[in-house]
Length: 328
Ligand code: NAX
Image (tube, rainbow, N blue to C red; front, side):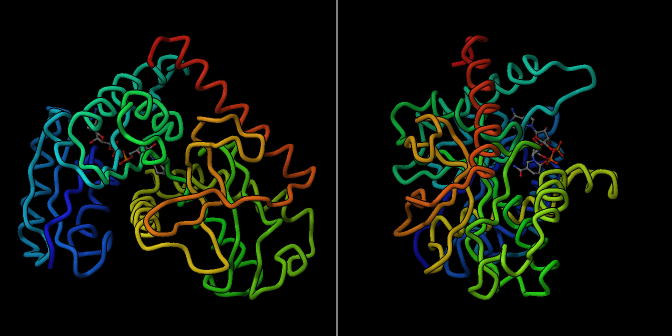
């Protein structure tokens, strides 16, 4: 085994943190041969709970886990970080306006971006899970001028995995038979889960499904509103599935996408597909040699165009609101 990889998890005492940390420590983030050093970042009032989780991590005697540090200070938490999982965020409280939400999160993700800029390892990879994930990732990136912008990503892998599962269920295929599905835009109800390039056992998904109304009226809203449906059923928001998607996102980034397939991730736009340059939007993404790139030259039909534009318009509004609030 080589030198341990430093993984920082923010919001470590939250419910996603609890579902995530044990799997990181058991090798599901970077594989069974890579030792991991964990740094947990929490707000001061949750440090004690994070210490409890760290005690349980100790009690698992994971061979790959070489150490755990707990911090309430971002600069210390991101010192030497290779993989930063930004999970902790300020949730929307009752009666909270969007500006309040953006301000609260700007106050978290700005300083965390600056701390990453100050202390991260050269190869740092950042995944933002905490909502509003795309805009939080954008804020963090703006505060990290020395880190390449393409190291900042936002999580839409849970939406992607949800879409794969829905399509597999509808077509009777296995999840491994589904390829080239895309989540476009914002990780919000405006996201666009796109089947127009997807395949089921190599056949175009839209031919296999052969039901436009199902795509429009069932598939898209089911995927886009799945988070709310989980809350309704479980009485709590998605946690284990979100943690699983975060592991998938980073592992795919490091180990690559399969030939003839891609994944979905919020990455910085290079202007592709009419998405304004610099925005962090979800795209079809290929991972090769540890780098993410947007799948080029896909044909976008009128239906897809309108859906992508609507979600990207929401991202533009969020970015403009963040600028107007002076958060970047
Ligand atoms: P919890 O409320 O259980 O945990 C959040 C934790 O973050 C708390 O322990 C809190 O103390 C901590 N925290 C708050 N501010 C912090 C700061 N400045 N530094 C460090 N820690 C801080 O939420 P949980 O269910 O774990 O969800 C975490 C985030 O993931 C939320 O923003 C949620 O909306 C978002 N999600 C994003 C998803 C995605 O697909 N991108 C899906 C799942 C999830 O809803």
